[in-house]
Image (cartoon, rainbow, N blue to C red; front, side, top):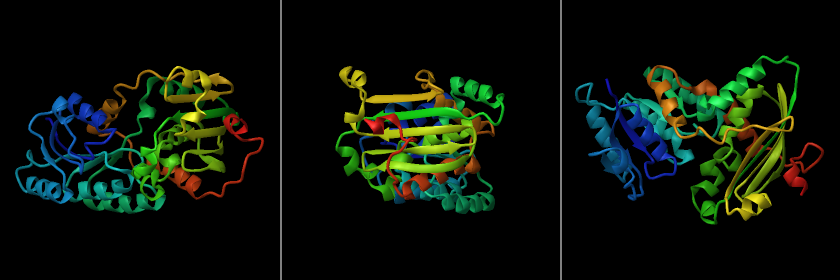
Length: 315
């Protein structure tokens, strides 16, 4: 039996992946909300979606559906709104009797997870999040390989992620730490989750650089030492990338060997949705380690560079 979905933040960058996942899993989008009315993308995936630019009217509509027959109510709320609204929109989903499927980061602070866990238990509904790198076939195979190694082995890992963004980024909600959580949270949360998933819990955390466009540091994990660098500054792109007029550079090396996972991203959100709909998916405790790490990076004192600094900082 197909399920009814509603979505918040349908005008945002990541929403089309959720629209595709809802459609490709054979379900219906019933209602959508976004303060921006440039949402023609809806027509690519669904017909007759009730659309609202005011959350209050969206809330009223969903509440009205809740009081109808069970097949009319909203079963899932997909949350693609700005990061600082995720917590409130998850709460809304539970209040109207729906399960939540929330984009990363689920919340900005680890203590928010504790409050949501109480609400999840009280409501009997489930909070799911999107950790799509955990279902990437190449990365799943890599994790299986790593888990077979001796536990005391520590790998040398270098993570570099540069995604060029214009001045608009800093003006938008993404550029405000209280709304986005800063660079480590907004563009880095899925990489930090990946690292912890692959190499175990955090044992040490140092931040070597932090400004509005670039952040970098060092992590000691249970089975890895990680030098990481993340930036939205195009001037940080390697010359071969910049000269090719590309705006994104992503690299993870383990003991000097590049990990190739650039392909296979098309249907990762859809795969996560399939798992959620079958009773699986990723819940609150799955996201806690990366949310805690991103929060600690945001609050850390910058200690400058040293032997453990990422190579890009030494340039």
